[in-house]
Length: 428
Image (tube, rainbow, N blue to C red; front, side, top):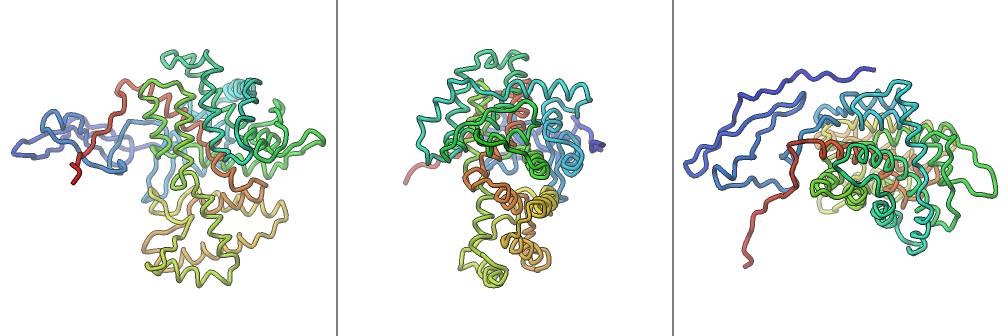
């Protein structure tokens, strides 16, 4: 497996000039290994008295990072230089975790050691089981996870000193290991079943499945096809550059907050329907369509601006081409449904919608290609997860990306506490 080798090199001699109120401000132009150049506006206010205005930070780089790279125009996603398609095909989730946290794929010895660390941290403090009884049974699992993850810092004092490298490493391992346990406990609590403890003899995805679906009164066998599908879903969602929840984790971390609080902040942000709830929205759309015969009328409504009907699971704020994760997810979707013997009408609807979107001039012009959320909801439903668990599963996957970004930020000498500026407009 080969990492993508960027061809660009930093150029510290180039500058960009901006003329403001007859004052010329020269700002350094910085180049990454690949991707667009950036203009360093750090001295802009000091030299001109002006700030930049960029709602949503769509044209602003808030950090320098070595972790993830996205080229939305070409449909490229790289983890530490490795294409996502290669990793999904040739690696498992824990190998990808090691890659994101440490910068390179592990050797056999490194993997065995890392796997051991994660396995030894999968259990949560027994006293934490009492937390769950304080929530209503119908509480959303994401609400439960926000509270429980935030409380981890009150139990694990030996990994909250962000300035201690050993503490940061232990916190990283704990978060990757305990998030599946916490998510599974939230699920079990919501359906009134007893908690199932982690098993050290199972690999990561299989262990999560047995914590979610096993019961004490009978043995549970993990289907290897289902386990592989879940492992692949987690790989595809492990990190995605400076998205809303990742930026939230970095912003919380910039204040010196402990890592558990930072991850809880990321969970809260991910809970938003515009971010982590996209696969849930896509599945609801397919359910509303119901059958292939209803698609023409639905498409007609999508094209009619007056109807206000959106095509969920298509298009992406970053990707202006086919989402590379969607191609992998499509294959996984067929594998799971085929193995489980499920004939799902929603898959037929999804396939026909995909065909139309890829050939209809309206969707081609607007670059509304299927994204990863289009297929992942179908797979998760086939495995047996209710819609309320879709976003918690996203959080389980994304935790390693959050913690890798947090570690990178803490160790970056350029980083300082986040303090965005504003354009103040007087009322009235």
